Length: 246
Image 1 (cartoon, rainbow, N blue to C red):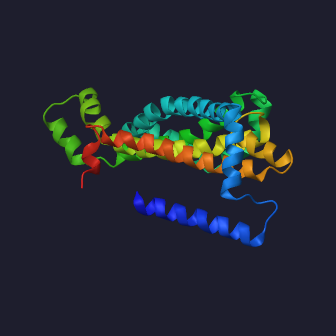
Image 2: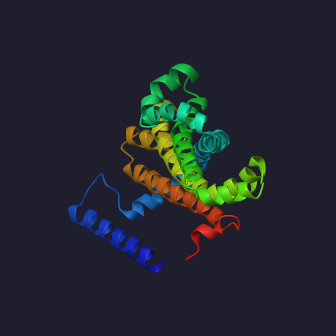
């Protein structure tokens, strides 16, 4: 932790020095950034924008989680499902979530449903692929050994497959939540009037408030780090800790 804090302090010092040296009238110093962020925090504007973004991410990512994990387990466990659905998902997965924005606006308008749909689209495919891959990487000898002892497929799936694939599911969740946070900011820049993405564009357009632009960017990064940290806490669960033991 200390090395990371030292690097951050160094970057802030370099930032402050460069702005002071160039006497930039546009790019803010760290002090101006803090002043702008405090200005938004005092009247509750910052909290409202952060809450709007988190709500959209929570709804879209939660829906993707409900769909992706059962579907990924099914595709990994049933060969016919994998052969049928995998080509479709592999074709849709490389399409940038940003490319879906015009269709999302056309289908759902410019309210909250559009970014929730975009977050769902962006995060569901990484979790499906990671979950399916987790099932496929289970050592087949363990499955054969359980079958030799007469373990039913239902018990085998519940007691062996699901615990074995949980670490891969967590990896997929971390990837999915990162992409979801990225996409909601992009969607808010284009189609909405609330959220951190909208705050960046509004600050730029309303008098070139680059202190608020940079503050919003830093807040986005901090929240992204916190969301990833929350997902990593799942690695401490007893049922998945075995994968991370050194």
